[in-house]
Length: 321
Image (cartoon, rainbow, N blue to C red; front, side, top):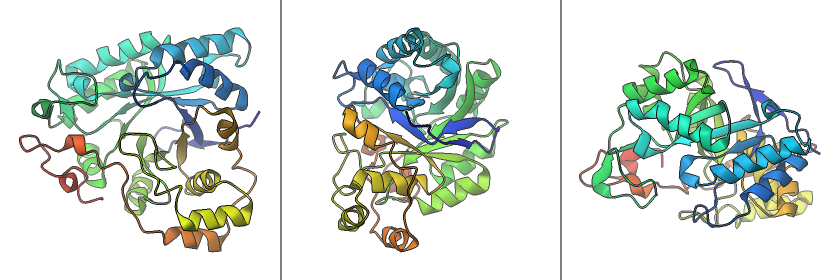
């Protein structure tokens, strides 16, 4: 079993495993393999599990945790770090606490380790949970009321830390201007083809830890591409080091002092994705990776609507594309 290193969250001193296991599989809830894969991941050494109400996999994750405890794979729930996310239909101040309470009930937990705002957007209450959103339902998020409710979740002991996902530098600045408890984490797309240098610098200065999703380009997702795995630069480095392209990507992310989420239900790849700690990239290799042409993989096109708060992808990401 691999002992995954941890990082300390600058905002509150709590720790987060530097490699986590993603449970989302598109179409959501499309297979029954979440429970089995989670159990195998625990056996391999994964301790951070990332989920969301949107992913429709809270129940199998709950069952896997319970089974891991019964079989002695872990001694207590506190050995695990569980992240979940607030989806847009509940992103209103008065709905946040009940939404987290429902999530905890589904997961069979008393508290989360980390609760994130999934996107800096809201839907009109009562809107559909899925990604197939009606454009007229998208509205601007009231950061003050939503974040105030997130802070209440932490004060109530429903989650140990709170944070955000898919926030640009500008939106983080807007949020930081009104918070009492600052966000501990910003979970964003990050890989060698989308290195987020500006955002990483900003978050480091503000004491916000970054967690990277889609470190391999998210092939198989609605917006996923082959740009990362097909990169000639990464393939060349992989051949020279006798590693897979995936391992090169994950090691690169790890060396950026951020945590990373991997998502594969293939048992060999699950093991391979943890084999990144006892070797490192050379400065020459890092320099080559730093020169890879950059392109955001997840444009979040669903956020753009003529009648909504964001009229273009550039406006939603505040030019960080």
